[in-house]
Image (cartoon, rainbow, N blue to C red; front, side, top):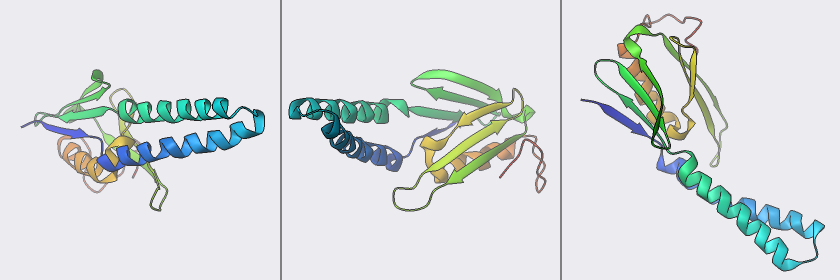
Length: 151
C-alpha cells in the first residue's frame, strides 16, 4: 500500500503566527519612514497577508512512497521529482534550532541524479518515519555511511 507524507500542522501553525508578527514589525519600521498611519497600516497588512498566503500555499508538499520503491515529490499539486529508491543511495542533512518557535531544516539527498529535496515542511517526526521506510527499500548498507548518506 502506498504511503503518503504531508506537512505537519505544527509547521503550518507556526507560519501563520509569524504572519501577524511580521506585519507588526513592518508597522514599527514603517513608522520611521512615513508619518501617514494609514500607509503604515496598509503596508503591514499587505506583508502579513502575503506571509499568511505563503504559509498556506507555499509549503503545500506531498511525498508518496510505494512498496515497490517508487518515490514521488509533489509541490503545489505538481510532480517535482520521481525516483526509483531501489536503485539509489539516500541520506539527509538536518539542522535544528531548538525552542518553542525553533525550526528544522531537513534536506533529503538521493544519489541517482544528486537530488536534494527540502523536507522541512514535514517536520522531523514525519520525515524520520518516511526516511526509515525509504531506507528499507534503498541500496544503503545498514550501519555504514557513504558520501551520499549524511546523518
